[in-house]
Image 1 (tube, rainbow, N blue to C red):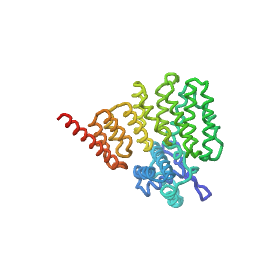
Image 2 (image 1 turned 30 degrees about the vertical axis):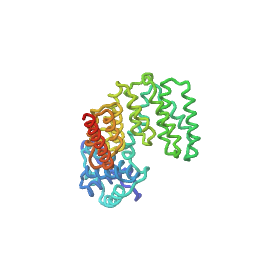
Image 3 (image 1 turned 120 degrees about the vertical axis):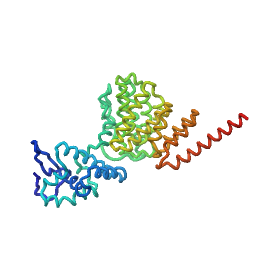
Image 4 (image 1 turned 90 degrees about the horizontal axis):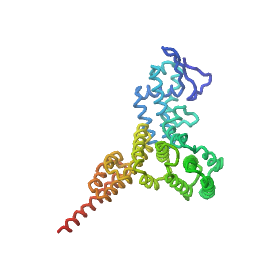
Length: 394
């Protein structure tokens, strides 16, 4: 039965109705559920996939906040569809269970809430809050810490307390913050074991990402400090950390995928180049799994980052047999990962492969024109090599 309220205003998470199920029990719905059902039935012909595609498109093209709202809507829609299916109900059942007057009054609000407005976060449903983005980012930042022999939690709180409780650090104040953070790291690492240093650095790398929205790092001092800790972290003796290598790499690679400030990009090639031969297959497996998982969840930015890192691994480890398939997957959405693979092939005199990388990626995309130009330049260089070779034989 619908739960009627004396007040005219209904909030999204308020209970709307409790439907008695044929097999016993009840199915409790909120006004968010009702609004989704209204829009689904009246505006999208009860086509769940069509409405999902609408929100999916918005999540890729809308301005920043609406993008996250659309991701939340897509997540709620997915869970609502799953819950209704498990209960043997349809969206029409949700509409049939409420009074006509209530339904008539809620229709314009449903369209406004879902198709026009961007409701504030405090009005979101739990399904909207706990999106795949939120869950995966949370896992990347702290989710694997229980696997460390010394938990980074030991240091994370201490590092957090080095930041003022409120307010923003201006670009001039960033110098003082950098000195405070550097002093803390130097003091704690002095007599620490390898496992303790691992926990210290790992805590720092997460807390800094969580706090960076409070800092104007125009001078780059915080970024430089982050890069320095990153470089030290990857040089740790992983055999002395007393934790499974698979756990270390899973945690580390997911952190890199979700680190979106560009602090580590310059150091990543050295990390992948320095992997032991026994570590390479593990890292490749993790990156491929992340790429596939993130694509399926429509987390395009992070999926692209995983694919870029996979290309970096294969390039630095001279895994030439992977280049064509990677170029096909990469397309022309970004340019440097393509040119790097081609240049590595050319450097090792694999000229057909160097050309093939460009040919495999070439299709409409943001950097198609630039990559066409680089392809033509490569063709010119190789033709010149052929002419010189012929002349030397005459």
